[in-house]
Amino acid sequence: MGLFDLEKNFAFYGAYHSNPVNIFIHMLFVWPIFYTGLMLLYYVPMLFFPNFASFYTIIYAISYVGMDKKSGFVAAILCFICWIGASASASHLGYSLTWKVVLAAQLICWSAQFLGHGVFEKRAPALLDNLVQAFLMAPFFVLLEALHQFFGYEPYPGFYTKVNAMVDAEIKEWKEKKQKKSS
Image (tube, rainbow, N blue to C red; front, top):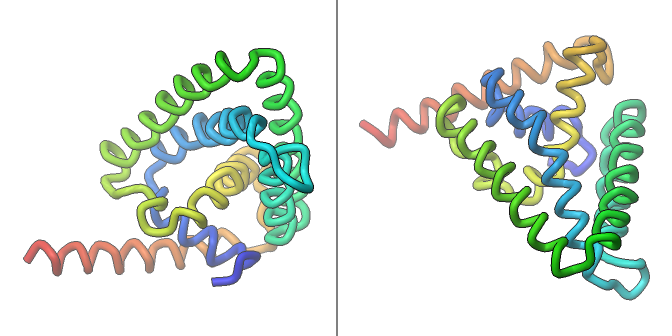
């Protein structure tokens, strides 16, 4: 699967997030995970970048624009806003308080997401099958879901019809494998 293949990336992640309550939980908690992660990465120096948070932000922004120009640009702007805010927050709080704030926020956000998967989705999170893809796709997935729900946005006409069919096929395959294991 190509890094910039939006259909396949969305279908992969969407197959783990088909329950509306779980999607809502992710909409609330994915971007705070990203933001607080950047707060901690603010303190990790890099050779050619001010810190790892700036490098991380650039990788995410490029990936999102590469997947879809319009919504990717919106996602890139959100990534840079998070980076600026997280850097300012981390700088203001100092390392000793930043890691405590990050730890508390991450525990709350991850707990909510695992609860969403266990109670509503009844499926393990995508990160257990593909950690990198799950971390990269999560913020973009929830942004695309929000843009679609509130503004009817589609990267191209018929995108949601096509990827929902792919999601349904992946869920069906997962259920068949699960059924075979239990019998």
